[in-house]
Image (cartoon, rainbow, N blue to C red; front, side, top):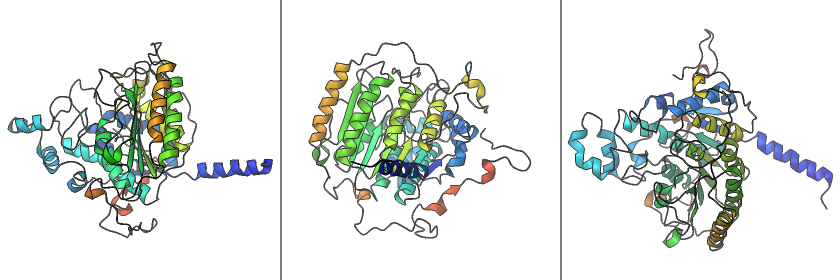
Length: 445
């Protein structure tokens, strides 16, 4: 029987682990300057609003904050085709008429419009995800946040669902250089189809998506879609109906992810936190509160596995920053007040000016019987997963890792000039975050 002193030591050690969790955060102020067009639901400005809340809550003081170095075309073509990337580099609103066939071929023009600075926008959100994966690989961080990322619908040669470059896939490819197995978790209301498709035939990446299914974009993600060839049973899909609430989501997410962690034992996790699964989203139909959404983040954090946390969907402008700011606090293990601090976008949060929002009274069409039935099916699928997948499964030449690959010394910034190490990431100048001697505050406008 364990002694009380032993229990106290365990608690103390847990507290030490919690206090030493190193969190990094990627943000570029330029992200808010890009605009998909009048009336388009995707608004990059929400990332700037999130950052402004993070700053005004004082959360930035407990993280290392980086401005990512823009990724190159070559890094993007580790997943995407050369033709597609070249097209994104040259297309702009002034020359669209010259590229009519290309626009159709690459599915650009409607949901995924051409706008000024499109390729630079793609570079910005992708750079934070790849840069975050590099920091995790080099053991410089335990958790990395990139709220600009999480654009999970993009395909190898096609834009889809407001997404052009699939930063999730590129980050996972980076993580696979140093981790034999990577787990991708998606709590966006839309199925993470682009990521699932990219890794559908490998057992080195497991994808787990919890999403609305049935006459809903993108139309994929049935429980019976489990992967193929070497990747069979490594695609986990939990299809859901309208009205999903906190208790229901918790009742499925925790047991399914718990079983996956036990069975698959990933070396790293990529967690896509699309905020369109929140109650009141412009395009969504779930009924999650901030606490219900963030409970997923809290649970994943308990496994102490290197984790890259990304944004994703989220189309009610006043709610997305609330969600991602709260989840930043959860990742830091910090309690923040419900009363919002004054910030540059304070008027967006009226009339209550509170962090947490009430949910609606919509009916939850997910019965306990339905959820239990799907959960049982997924557990049966996971029983067929070998506890430790075979090594060096072919998933593309860019993913193969030499057996003798050594990590650079994590404190030596002069090593490996050909790799994206710390000296290629521009750490924010302190004046960006603390009032300067003149009293000027960080400019996020």
